[in-house]
Length: 316
Image (cartoon, rainbow, N blue to C red; front, side, top):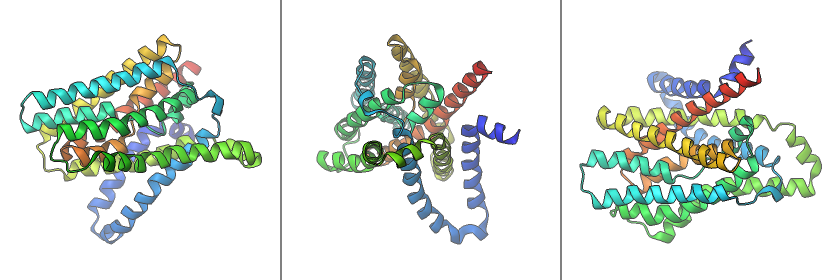
């Protein structure tokens, strides 16, 4: 009974575990000497977890199935136009700094690429992991070009050249995204025994992602607790993240449904790489705007938890 409960509610339990873990280490003085080691471990563990889960996920994907589809173009168009619209509003309409932070938080949630682990949830919900993977590649290419162009326009004081920013985003995103894919392809073609062995652990990708989610949740709570901004402003930025999340899941499902790919469309547009989004906020925008993508991780996983619950209910 306990194992079934944990399996059914993995995502909310992971978020609660990450939150509890932060307060556990933050509030107990005896654990203070362990914090530097823990921070270093988290810095290494998070990319390792993402790499492992992607490798297991990509092992199940057929390379010939990675083809661009019509709905990919519509979703990319929405990300581009919505980001440019918010950026134009920030540049052309003078407003108080706290309201700028709200719109900046929404903008980074809109242009942020699809989470590298979105294929895990898509597979759980019965969608097309290959179609989702194709869009993940395309959305990362879009972000790598759009972010260095648009964000310095919004915050001109960000003293960084286009090519430096472009290469920095590539260096943070693409190794974790592409290397597992090529390793999975290599194993499928040349080391078939290892490939078949890894396929037996495909479901483990979901739980590896849950561990990564717990870590990111703890980091999000830490950024909120340590912020000096008024609570009212933080709430507004978090609400902007909620609105962006709901709109993108809704539009993704509607557009994907028109092409008989409703689940993949919703996850492609709605589930974001929030770790990358938080970094982009700190690099190009007001640091407080990172509360937007920081809260987004909670909103998107609440929606995912609800979707998984609905699927289990239908099956039972």
